[in-house]
Length: 405
Image (cartoon, rainbow, N blue to C red; front, side, top):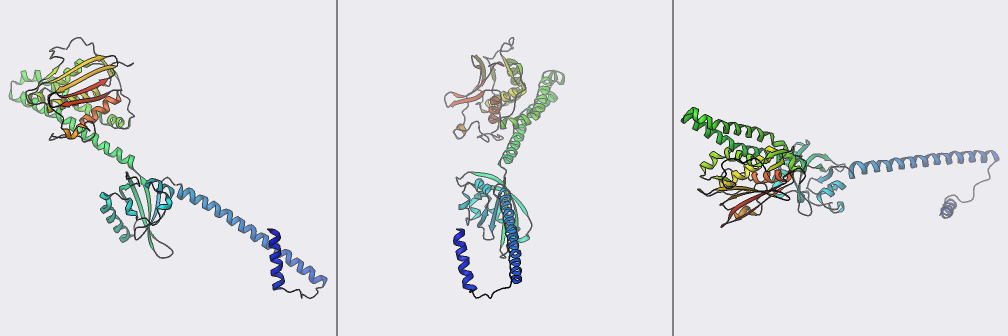
């Protein structure tokens, strides 16, 4: 290749400078040789400078690749007409589309239908003011799934005079999930607090209209238990958040199940009277036997779980029908059944333990059974149910009965 280049150079030299150069004196030849050497050095220096510039350009390109293409957030450039002009690898990955296929695609194609109006107003204000702005909305991936994103957008003018949007995309789905569940936990706590507060109010009313001394003797222990339950409900918010993430470890201790169930029956006495539904525990035993059935659990969480399930059973039970709570020791642990003659509506049977699964309850949140399942699973157990028009509904809680099970 070098020989070929030399031949081409000699041909150009002969064409541009015919061999009619006059004879030079020795001094002139020395001067010409000096000039040639200086020129050669200049060319070598220029060549070195070009190589250095190329090295810096390569380094700059590598930095650009790291900062733009490999950035942990998505970058997009969108034209004023709403077409994607450029996107980095992270943006393409977030949207589930090969980067080469993003160019000239409408940006709004990837915005959730329910958030299109919000984005339209956001974009209009952005171009009107020229000020940076942020927006949280849902983006749609190529496979149809969506995720929550935070968009930070600025408008700039290109060298050609066109207005474009520079968009930074950050996936905030986990944060949104945490926020949503925190709201759910607050709803759970509000929902669970309401029952004890109603009971406390009713008991105070009974004490005021009846024989205050006699009523106080019977009512105040229940009132104190209700107050304790409310305080512990507030403390349960953070554990429920951790259970949602699967990171909670219960603070276990040995408890007597029978005593717990009788305490729950006592706490729900006002409610059961309102619904005309008696709560029977193990064939309506009136005095707790010597405690033989022990559970190694976090006491309040299991109490709250059973309180919710039994309360739901009372509210779902037809007037005059009893709610039966029974428990059985098995090799793998303890089985607790809660039965009432009511029927779970068909509309929620397939999602009985999911969030917001509720039907027919004026103040139902659909979070009671969901939180109960969370608590059971945190203790290594689980909850199931059966329901039919003839047999009613039976909720079954399976829990380990000892630390080793």
